[in-house]
Amino acid sequence: MKARVLSGIQPTGSPHIGNYLGALKNWAKIQYDYDSIYCIVDLHAVTVYQQPAELRAKIEELAGMLLAIGIDPLHSSLVVQSAIPQHAELAWMLTCVTPLGWLERMTQFKAKSQAQETIGDGILQYPVLMAADILLYQAAIVPVGDDQSQHLELARDIAQRFNSLYGETFTMPATHLPTVGARIMGLDDPQKKMSKSETGSGHAVSLLDPPAVIRKKILRATTDSNPAVEFDSPAGHPGPGVRNLLTIFQAFTGWSDDNTQAHFTGMRYGDLKKQVAEAVISALEPIQTRYQEIMADRGFIARVLANGAERITPIAQDTVNKVKKAMGLYSDS
Ligand code: AMP
Ligand code: TRP
Image (cartoon, rainbow, N blue to C red; front, side):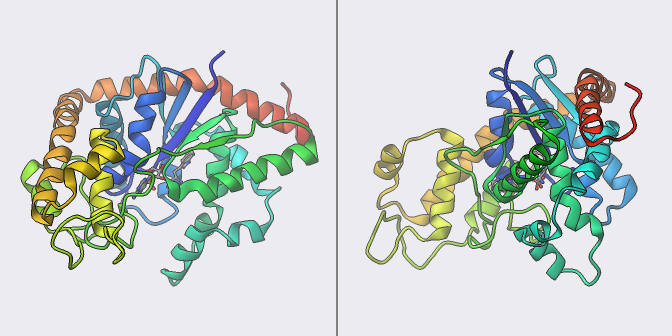
């Protein structure tokens, strides 16, 4: 039997090249080697207010995008989290074995709670629900970007604690990061992770941006005061902005470090940016074409999501039954 892979993405904002290079590209790549489940995590999205009609539309659009980047519904189960109630059910049981201190230590919790006046309990519980997503299917491998590493460590801690309290129940999930592109930075500010929630127009390249917009955003990307690309210079070049552009280039083209250095050494930043922009445009073009085709058949998307849920619900129910039995909760199965 193939090992199981599970990952998730929130249906908020517009998926960008950071999501693609950090996670989605890997999802499509490894799906044939594993039994794969990819989840649109709408219950995570509502930890902050979402305009209902917009959220509903974004779920379908994200499903269309995941199919467009190559998730193959004949091999992978593509599902919406809230369609499978066992996610929320298991999350409660895991909440009860999770010390509050573990959750308060999460970097994302600290950042999000500092930015808001009132903090919803969902923001604190967020990583427990994420642990439930993973443990529900006994996933062995979780392909994510670097920003999720801490949440995954927590998922392992929760699994371990449950197993030691109630007996071996959960598989320990391993984090799977891409070798290049695990953390793509904002184009406007290379100190900040590229994020869906940043609204600045020069911050992120959306997977649906037309070529002219991609060119404009990349040509305006923040670099440094050096005029041309240098590697490992005593002055610390390349700086973070140039490094980020080179990472984007390498992640899209698959070029090695040696080839990249040989090609770009001494190149003026303007030319570097043009070449990065063209690499991004040509990689996104086929995805955008497929996306338009897929979105013209909403019935297809609905069938894919329904089939995915039907295929994996028995696995989720089996785990919930096991957990209930282990904990002594009432169950007639
Ligand atoms: P999210 O948009 O937060 O639902 O993230 C979906 C996936 O994209 C997760 O696996 C993240 O780790 C990954 N991701 C998000 N932003 C970035 C980024 N700037 N660089 C690399 N991976 C990212
Ligand atoms: N928290 C993840 C993010 O924001 C999304 C997510 C939810 C996830 N459940 C998951 C990722 C399970 C991997 C596995 O990116």
